Image (cartoon, rainbow, N blue to C red; front, side, top):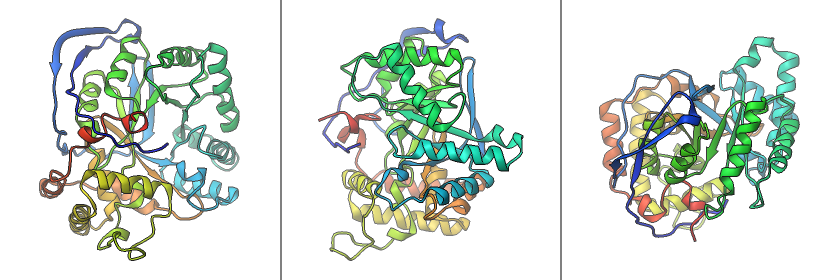
Length: 389
């Protein structure tokens, strides 16, 4: 997905939603209007449990709050060996990091999960499977969303992942002008009722469209969006709607492809070959986000601040970065990309659960981030980087 940065400064208004237990009888109230111009600040919490439930009405799924992202299997991060990758997935799962984020467009990601899940069935006790989760995405082309097309597409993922039902299907749509996304979601809801999907979710939808989807009685449990210490857009609009409806956020880009790490402290990327190479699609993508937010100099100040916080707690910069986002309003889980069989971050990931950021930590981070530009004005709402030209 290409990153498109444009100037957009539209005022934001949305209506509160009054929930009923049955999503099909959801009532939309038109009485309240909320307007926000800057992000909410971090919410301190002692809720450091490892798993969380995402829920809408009768639909629910518990997941690990640190999610293993598999975009890195799609090419551009190094050659993936199938057996080594599957063994790495098992190591993550054995360490309690047993929720994997996949997609139909992530190369062999769904196939690797299928091999992994069969290895689990052979080599682990039956109760082990109760905590393993595979959250996949469906990114369809802009064609007519008929029941048969949606069903056939989901059947492909079921076959690749070798599961009787998808734990979560996260739906992406490219063009809001084409309202076929509502047809697709209604067909996905039908498949959920048939038992082929356990929970229906979204990825990269903005607040206005999320509200419209809920108005149409679609019981989505979560929306996966880009969210990091640098990119706080989800806290400006999306989080308030999530608070009103119970829909949760699952975040990606939380460590910015590795930019939020010790590796990039005290580096100068303006001088050719002076710093670590930006040699992966994720590093290149999130470097553009840094440029839009405030540039490399301000980002260095942020890294130095995060380094001090990390040193104080005896953890790494990525651990602090993920904990900060997990503490934000509406966030159920945050993703860390895994380079299966090439490297791992199991220790850093598990340290997130016991880390508690205090008021001093949060204040020092906010002192830097508030100097950055408002990405809502530059890019737009969640997911707009994939749609606006």
